[in-house]
Image (cartoon, rainbow, N blue to C red; front, side):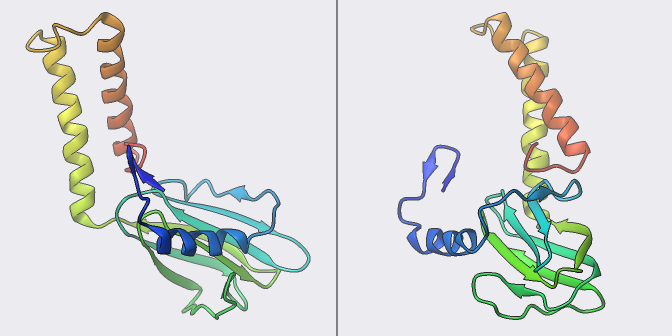
Length: 176
């Protein structure tokens, strides 16, 4: 596990928890949910025996996850088998930074939608970083800085600023 160039070599308990949830999953292809890619990514699969899904927080901060089910029966944590509470077709989870959680339910269970809630302080921080990149790009364009950058490097900064802003506008903080 890492955050940029910072490897977490002392994060063994976190890694054990991650691997426990990961190893409980069968070695087969899951389908990514289009409504749950950023910052928490969710994959799902159903067969004759059970409905399975897992969620991974891609961010360095905790994220709340709210899942609405079309139908859900016997929702349980996959590695432990412990029952997970569902109220009026909703299940709520809080994923720690980089946490993986895996679940199982009856074969006729299905996810209708997934919603993530990012802590405001972290959302504001991403906005601040994107704004900084936009300002840096503008300073390069106007010649206030970047005299040591070649044209390809300047273009990379411009592209990064544009893509980060587009991702943020779409609500994709991890991508931003």
